[in-house]
Length: 402
Image (cartoon, rainbow, N blue to C red; front, top):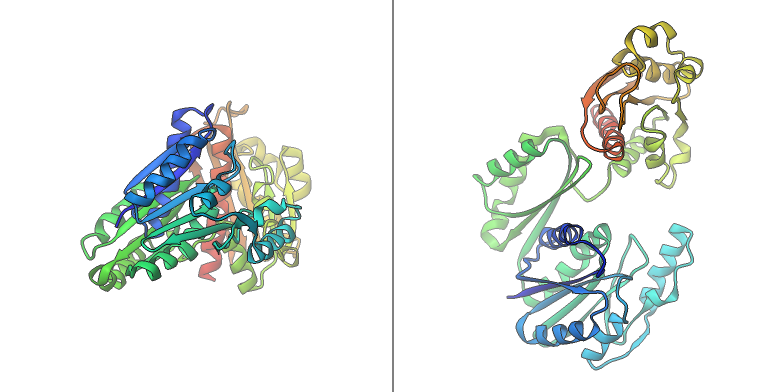
């Protein structure tokens, strides 16, 4: 069985940026259980090349997955419909999912998102407005999905793979681990798991947040699945924060609801990013008490009760200050979980001459306050994003142990 993947790139984009995107998208399909035999990247203006390619793939591939968005200069959906001898029409099911996206995002998305080839089967997009679809011949399946990576993952895993399994009798099982940890440790776990069973995998990462998709094909690999999963849990432990596709923020919110805890954050160099992640979750207002950006030394002293002499002797970026920031939140009696961050994001150090990337994160509960030291690398943006994720991951670990 041959599977082809087609996506588009802007003619002005550099090759490196495009290559990284293609690798990520291809990995997403592999993680959903689809082996990509051939991949094509077309110019967003190449309507003639696209028409030629989809006609050729009908004869050379069994499954064609097209990652589509708003990046083409021509109507790709109409061209796909024409190749199957049909026309575009409003799809009632797509319209319902589009209405849900409008309500969730508060955006009046264009009705064009609900226009699909007549006779197509919808691939719902539960994370955005773009609604995908499938069209098929007797021995040929075309699946059109969003080219946004997170949306693409969801659409493939939940809909494209089961559809292909049913059509072609493919026996495939998938499993997802979300991990916040060390790249070397994860790769060591993969190598160790390969000794106890056979499987395919796709590993993607952003700012320390990893998604490991495992694919078990055929009866032999499916039989190995329990042993493989047990090995990953044994070696990665609580670095695994979920065994399904979710985000750190969503997982933390699940635990906050489950434990019924009130949460507050005091942020210095992360500038409110931790709080911003939390408020992405609908219903957080019941649990989030406050999010303070105590950027200056004076604010740390006045708002959180940090001792001025400790800032003077130890520096604002220190374990003792991070501790007192979290403790100050807990002393109000208004929260059960306190998150505090202090660090040097760069590009230059502060007056202390401590290294750029040095940071301390404190997580506090009724059981006590724990502080953690990290030395991060990269740009100012990368340092603060990674620190934000570290803070969320540490809070997840603390709540899972309670």
